[in-house]
Image (cartoon, rainbow, N blue to C red; front, top):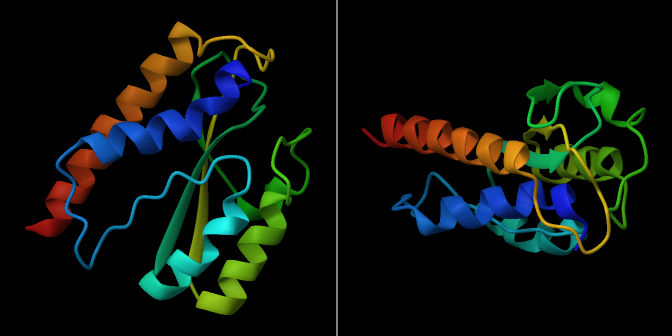
Length: 140
């Protein structure tokens, strides 16, 4: 709905289209604007690590991908999520006892009704390729 703000959704959909093993080691969720609504599935899966991929204003060129320290999530500019990601991370850490990591992708635009920019689309697919490779290595 908001152009590059869909970076996380595009990433999860692309991973779901891959032949990623969904047995006991990897769970991919498309969480949208209300990831807190998917915590039941996470609780049942009981992961050691939760990786949240989202558009984030990193002050960089569009399509830049960076890990964001959890302590920095509170200071991120306006989020389109119904619950701040910092609160979700704290909840997951306490409830599931997992590590929560954030990967931010610098948007070009969050214009309502716009399409994902070419820079963000390319960055998402580069990230998905890398995650797919890492998941494949872990499965061996």
